[in-house]
Length: 175
Image (cartoon, rainbow, N blue to C red):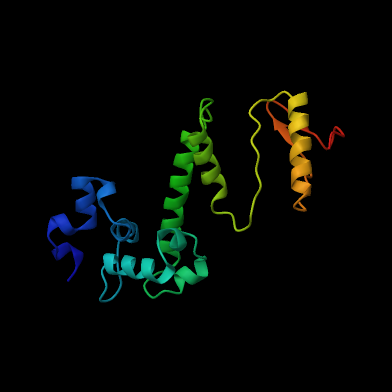
């Protein structure tokens, strides 16, 4: 039976409008983005199948275009819609973190690092230095990090202080 024949409180879009997006399951949210199903499958059926096949929402959104489009009923248009939605969410998070007061507490730093690093395909080491004056404290900290990382065979190539100008410790001979 098509979704349009379901009771209004069971249809994903109407449920969102009545109760808010948080009331929807992952499959219901995904069905809204997909908009249509395929022969014999509603958008919600297709959404449930995709979540099961790829192992959840996060895995689905990280799926390569070729693998996504290989599923019957999907194509590049639906892939593009989902990727655009994902990028909108990323930009929304980045905008919230863009203000000068954004890094005023550990939870803000956690959100920033998670938004920037969580979907990397390889391990990434990052450090945040929150002022723009190269200082003896920065140099001492860099030396300590360099020594500690050397213990696990990680070489520090550079330390940048980013402000109105970018200062490279390597270029200044401080590494």
